[in-house]
Length: 276
View 1 (tube, one colour):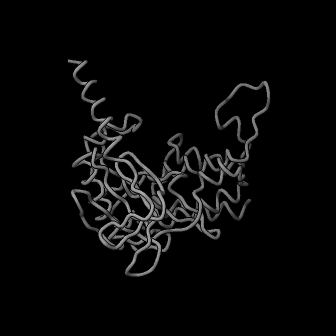
View 2 (cartoon, one colour):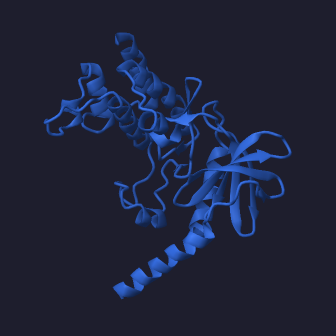
View 3 (tube, helix red, strand yellow):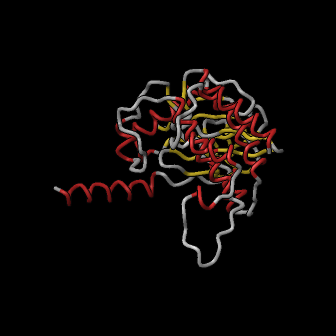
């Protein structure tokens, strides 16, 4: 039985190698969008930078992976449903949705810039406490907007935050879902690192905890480990002001959470910035 399961998975992987290959530069999709380059390749979709031949502007086009079948199409449809309800300057606008040759597509504004992951790990960018707090405060604005519209983002991480001219933009709503909606069972089975129970409904605190991890990653950008010193907890390694230390512990669930949600957290961040 186990051998058959492994054989099936291997066969699916081989199918994926051929069916999910990125399309070539210059390929036209939907007789409108011409591919310029591949921006990213996720578990369920491929994202391209394209030129919209009708408007003459650059756009981001996401294509569902054929090898992931109905689940990929369902996730892309849900992402489009979420995006059409969001209207914030730090969130790309949904421009188009369509289906061609059994593949689903969504088209959004293209935000030209670099992700914070690229800035930290590829360019060695380091951030001070105040700079980290400023970026986290900026990020909280689109996250709060998502919550106000009745959704959570579900994947607030440095690869999904683009910095453009000093301002942050939140992208990739592939895991977004309505407040109270549980994670899809099919998705839960494939995301072994997801800590939440399969039936746990979406709540704003999940995004706020992600912002805590985001802030922690940013703070570690300036951390220099000492030779011969064993790795320790972030509380020991990072020399933070007491107020920021407490904020992180609250966001990460080590102290009582922010009962007032994003609004309370925003007020606390603004107060803390004045102290730094």
